[in-house]
Length: 166
Image (cartoon, rainbow, N blue to C red; front, side, top):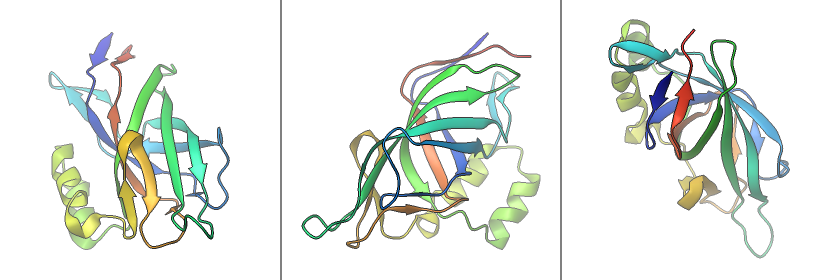
């Protein structure tokens, strides 16, 4: 059993579109990890691992409060045929469009930090979105918070994750 510590961050790609206009509390969604998570020279979470979560709270944009917001909670990982409980929240949201540099480096990158560094740059930030306390994603431009399929979310573990390898 490997214990992935609290505050470990990983980038996941959203597989389900989410919008503060249409999402419902407790609505389920899925994402997949972008790069291998390595501990002690061993891959503990391979790229492409399925991560599941739910909408913890949602507020559509309205006349009075024009900014829509949505809070996502991650609660399960599907790995090596098991489903360990996961407690993680969003700390950043980035556009899912891959530019040439990102895809070229992504193909040959053994180190997830290289890809994460590029995607976490200013150019990669999702326009019109702010991340607040507890991972609340809020629109900044008087609209709904829109997270299309492919949006990259950086999540941080809120409690240790125990993974039984193979």
